[in-house]
Image (tube, rainbow, N blue to C red; front, side, top):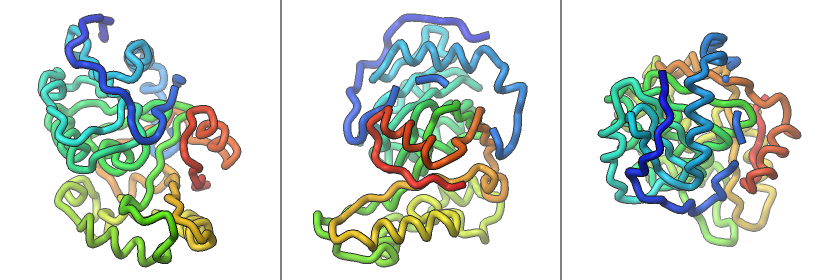
Length: 261
């Protein structure tokens, strides 16, 4: 179904920001056993690992590899060239919000299968994660959010104040509303606010307990997704503990991430 190809059609973009991770690796939220056994997904991830730290469209236009930070003003032509129902395989520490939304909208138009491996943080988690009708997260992968508005080296605000600032900078948008099941669940806030009571508590302890600015990342247990999103989101396996998450983040030199049990 998915054929390997070697024609490089998009120039390499070196990762910036958080280190872009490195392994292979689908679910607890909405189980899909057949997906876990499909060779095309494993083949697509293996193919994209070969093109580490680059953006690469396969010769048959069935796979688009995106192993990079999300740059500002990126030309989304490679996504336009991805075939209908193709695979978008991403590993990213995040990047530009506007570009992430443009990528997500283009993937939705293509009805692409989003495949996430190793890590998907910040704008990747906030927008690419729910881009299309279906997302597949490989094992040993961390998907994590944070409040994306910056601050100085000395902590100037409580986390609650930081959330308020983020809300003003990133207001509720049609982008999230059209992907939400229930528009009354305030789904748009998931981009910059901890989603569960546990992560909210832990993030505030970590953030407010420090004199210096710390950008805190958190996960969101997939058992909640089907209550919020239209997309079918499948995990090969969601990490089982904070220690497992710590092993993954240490391996790929990622920031500390709070696990959502």
